[in-house]
Length: 361
Image 1 (tube, helix red, strand yellow):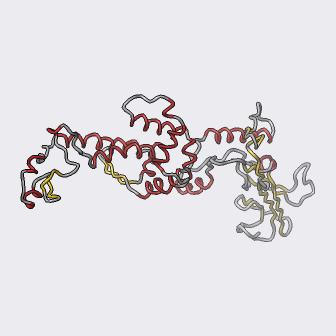
Image 2 (cartoon, rainbow, N blue to C red):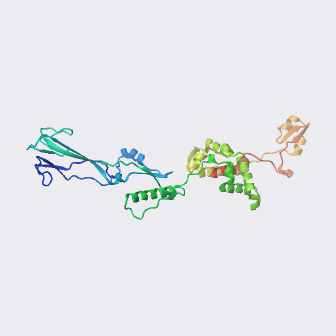
Image 3 (cartoon, rainbow, N blue to C red):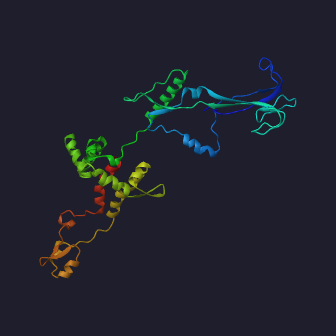
C-alpha cells in the first residue's frame, strides 16, 4: 500500500530573482530536495496496531465479489498548492523549513511574523477510492473463475489477477458440512454413508454373511426407522438435540473432559471419546465373568420346602398357588437350559451401534 497522503518542504533558500521563472520578483523562496515518497508502506510491528490489522484482515469464506477501488486511486495523487505573502521585499530573509516559508523573522506554524514573508505549501492526497463490487466469477451460474492474465500491464490486469487468486482460494476452502439438526429421516435413507452404517448393523446381527438381497434399500430403510423413528424430524428431535444437551465424560492424555458429543465432534476429540467408551464396553463384561456365580436353588429344592416364609427366602424360589416353586425366568446350568443373564452390559452393547451410527453420520 503506497503512502497516499503526505507533505514535506525539503531545503528552502532565497533569492531576489530566479532565472527563467521569476525574473522580476522582489523575492523568491526556493524549495529544493522536495521528495515525494512512492514506496510501499510496511505494516508496523508494535502491538498497538494489531487491532487495526485485524479489522483489515480478509476471510475469503463465502466471497463472491471483491471491492475494487477506482483506477485513479492507484495511479494518481491530488496536489493542493497554497501560496502566501506578507509585506514587501526585505533584505533580512530567514528560510523557515519547518513551516515552509521565507520571512524576515521567525514565525509560528500558523502565522507570518515580522513585516514581510512569502511561502508555498503543497499537500498530496489520494483520489477517492469509490470501490465497486466486482464478481470473482466470469460466469456466476457455473461459478467459473475469472481467468488469470498472462501479463500484468494495465489496471484491469491487476484486478483480474486478484479476482482469479481469491476465486481459487474460495474453491479450495473446505465446504462446511450440513448441520446435523437439518437432516431428515428421508435424507438419511438416501445418504450413502448412512446406508453403509445400516448394512453394517444388519451384518452384525446375523451369524452368517448376508447377500445383497437381504441388505437392499428396504432393509436399510427399516434399520434407519428402527434407530431414529418414522417422523422426518425424529432424527433431530430424538438424537441430535439430546446429544447437544448431554455431556460425555471421558479421559484423554491424562485430562478429564466433559463436553457434548457435538462439541467433541467439532473439537476433533470424538475419536478419543469413542475409544474410551468402547474400552469400557469391552472390559466390563470380562471383569464380571471373573465374579463368583451366585448359588441358585434347584427346582427340587424349592419343591421340598412347604413353609411360605422359608420358600421366599431361598434364592430363585417363590411361594405361589400354595406351593414353593422355582421363579419364572430362572434357569439352572445343570438342567440343560440357558440362564437369562440379560443385564446392563448387554443393553450397552446392544445400543452401541446406535450411538456409533449417530456419531459417525
